[in-house]
Image 1 (cartoon, rainbow, N blue to C red):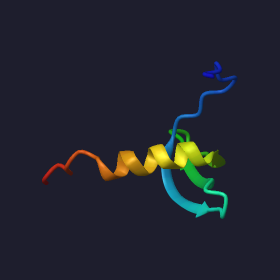
Image 2 (image 1 turned 180 degrees about the vertical axis):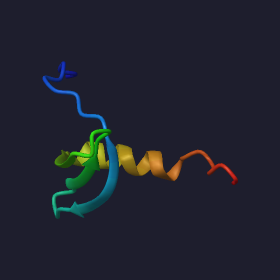
Image 3 (image 1 turned 135 degrees about the vertical axis):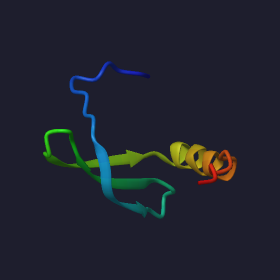
Length: 67
């Protein structure tokens, strides 16, 4: 299900914390700063299936660009 968001938040993640649970789910706490300088804090809960998809994406990520 893809809902249309009520709010769209744009900003740069300045810090984050990722915690895993015994049931395979995870919570990402992200601190953001928007163009106006406002600081935000978001909690994103990932179901176990989403955590698995994210792990696969990280394992198969594209090579990092060389500087």
